[in-house]
Structures are given as structure tokens and as C-alpha cells.
Length: 172
Image (cartoon, rainbow, N blue to C red; front, top):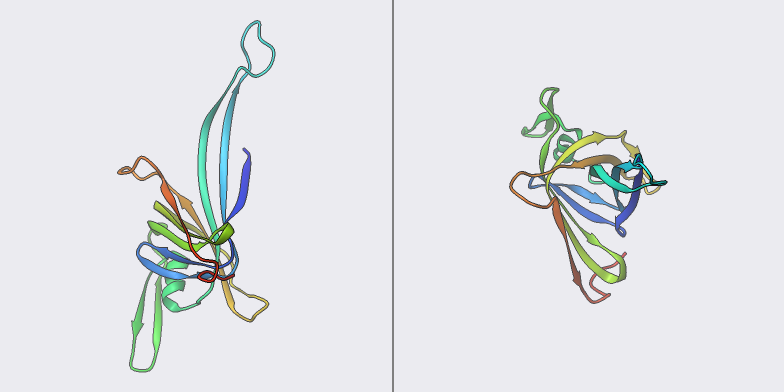
């Protein structure tokens, strides 16, 4: 089961899940591709592999989210929770029920050669939330992983849109 991984956004990006901004990244986003193959090599009078068929193909998107707000934590933890606002306090009421959160995933960031990139996946589930940590700059970081799923209404998983912009518009 080969697993490849590579950066899809250079530098920071804005992440929106199910219509809700869940924060931005300072680090590059990573896409993982899992690809299982069936090698057909048991054919009479032939030596070696005759054909290769894909049996499984999946994408995961990994990001380290910043902006540790209660709203973003609620989404990143993937729990049925409610943020309530009091006169002087804000609270996150947790109930540990329900399945993984599912929705559309949008990422806005910078690619190579000053390309503004928009990534849109029609259906994703937030399947993993790592341990929070403090980065070298003192900011709270929340690692998350999204599994990209097949949406029944679309023929593709999503799309990548590139827009070439002047180098002064996008900075690292």
C-alpha cells in the first residue's frame, strides 16, 4: 500500500470546512495519496507483470491550524458542541456524540511561482485531530486530518484553481 505525501500549498493558507472558517495555517498543507494496486502476473506462458489495476485510491489533507478560538476548536475536535455567549463569558458545551463532521473543504493559499490557489473538495470528513502544541512563535497549533470522499452528485472529488498574480500581491 504505497503512500505518497507532498505539499500542496506553499506557506500559509485559509481553511474553510462546511462553510465555516476553521483557521489558517502557517505551515504548508500536505496531501497524502494512498494507492493500492493489483498486479496481474499469474498468466501462462508470460513472465513478469502483465497488467496493473488500481484497487483503492484515497486522499487525505493534513494541516496545522492556528486561531485557537472556541468556534474553531468545536469544528476541529469533530464533536457535537455548541458555543454559547454569556454577558462576560463564552463557553464550549461538549457532548461526545455523533459521527465525524462532514462537509465541503476549501483551502485558499499560495502555490509555486506566485500562483494563488483555490482547492475545493466537494465532500470531506474531519477524521483526526492531533494534540495541541505551542509552536516556536508561541502560537497554539492544532493538527487536523481530512479524508476526501466521493460525492454522489459530482464526477470528480473536487478541483484546483490557479490564478497568476503579481509577485507583490502574495507574500510568504
